[in-house]
Length: 354
Image (tube, rainbow, N blue to C red):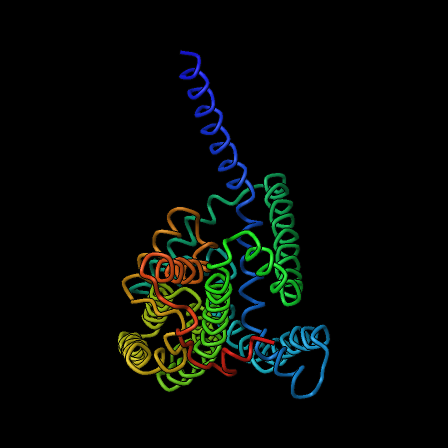
């Protein structure tokens, strides 16, 4: 009887401990997500950091710094090239927007289709504008959120830099915790996951740049309003597989309808043709099937993680699924990770290993 009571008490304590641990992890899920993204960033830049070290004897710390400075420089160059044109398009949009209630009412009466619906929605919204006192709290909230985002970005890139140097120590620690006969497979599995994540990120960046350029050119030919903004948006939306391009296409068609149905049709055809080319030729070659996931698995993982955790965590859908898929292959299917090959994207995956 006493033994049964002790077992019941032990089981209860274990169950409560699991629940408490799960709740604690849930509370810090944002920190865990940012840490994981930092690992992914490190996986993406590790091959080029190692290549710089071997080819030019550039220290790894300086190599990481060059990557971050180069990224900031590329962003600044892109903004310098794109922002003036984008501002002109925004000014055109603002110039066509009525500035008084009378002008708004007159334009609403003259407009038709989706533009009329948008102006009517603006009219309804203006009637519910908050007072000055009611605006203070949202402004404080937005400022706080912006500060948290900046801190999160800094933390993520700091983790990425740190992980460049500490990954091998972490692998050695995990190897010391498993039986000797499993140590080689443990290390090879970890390295394979690292190579897949890095290949996916590098391929995704190439895909974003390619799609943004092609869509911008296609929308320009179609005389799509705000073609540059829509093209860049379409490229950025590639971050969210399947769902992102669909939303970008709907947005382009909606904006095209504000001009005429022919423009909207042209935008829809451009997005559809690019999607077909991307699915059949571009994505397999650019991404190189780096993560080895089927479209159905990608769609399921994006949807499931989006529902469970929210929009931001959709960015983690494919990396997390790639990790789980690799573990299933190695642990359950008995695949030898050393025999798996990850396609080269900018740098061969094997360059990631010192």
